[in-house]
Image 1 (cartoon, rainbow, N blue to C red):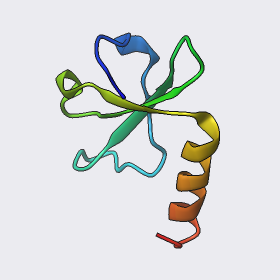
Image 2 (cartoon, rainbow, N blue to C red):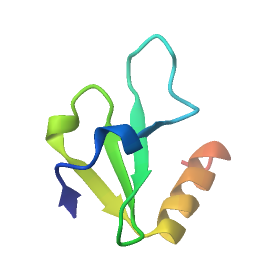
Image 3 (cartoon, one colour):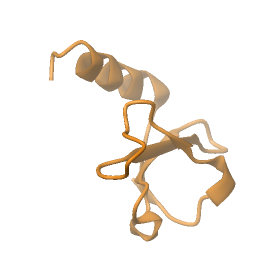
Length: 67
C-alpha cells in the first residue's frame, strides 16, 4: 500500500544511506503500526508500507548479503 501526506518531521534516514545524497531511503512508523518507507529525494511519490516483521526480515537479509 502507498501512503501520502505522512508527517515530514517523523522521517528517519537509513543509517546505510550516504550523507552525500544519492540513493537514500527514509522510514517512519505509521499510527496503525506499519513501517512506511520512502525516497528521501522525492517524498511526493508517497511511501510504501510494510508490517514490521516482514520489513525487518528484508532489512536483515540485505544487511547479511542474502539479497
